[in-house]
Length: 120
Image (cartoon, rainbow, N blue to C red; front, side, top):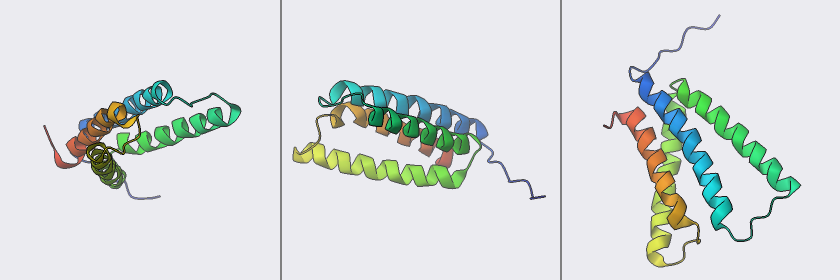
């Protein structure tokens, strides 16, 4: 039998981060569907959508459980996404969808930072 894993003191913030991650991922998908002009629903697209939903569900399960390493890894990825997306916006070479989905990326990063570093 394995030893019980220590739980972070602010587990409620991890719960909020997990729920926010799922909701913001759904908003991201809806915005992608509405703003990408060549988005067609095919069997392959449905397969990718199912994979995305399962993957987000698995990640959110770990976030909900208070896995600090997963949240730190996702926070680093989202910070890099924010920096690259902001640079492409300033440089004028951004994908047309970037201005619409960048706020969801900021909010997800904030929720991760709130759980990790006790942001208000």
